[in-house]
Image (cartoon, rainbow, N blue to C red; front, side, top):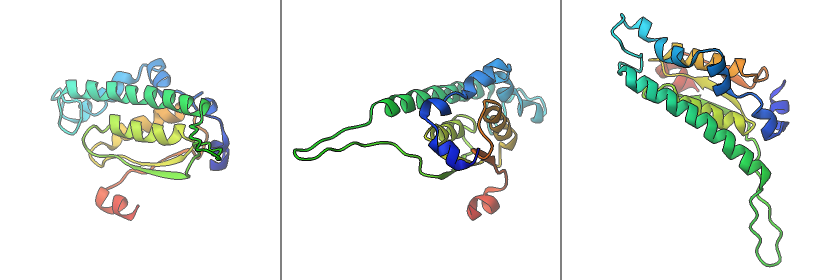
Length: 171
């Protein structure tokens, strides 16, 4: 679907693809925590930029919370447009997609923060270019895969790894 089709879809239509269900259904939630531990010489690190396992689990829990929060908020906002009428005026505040959003993930909380940023933009009907931290590109790729398998239409989310000094500065 072209970006305009994603933009024009309803909030409930965009929420039909729920990444947290996809992750749980595929048994991948703890794989996100484990994926970089294997790359860190088996030092029992979660790959959270040299953080311990418990921080990785907490980051995962926060990512799931972000998914739920933004989904619930978009449904609430979509149902009840904000109305502020002044005498003699009829005002309705509606939420519309803005276009293409760029998410440049930080090195700390490399799962939760990009999950929140990407999901907020997507659930609002925007398309996203996602550049993960250069310290956790494998984790970013896994997150991208979960979003894609959750049913996003082609063109709604793009993955762009690379050095922050090169790719990030250009973006």
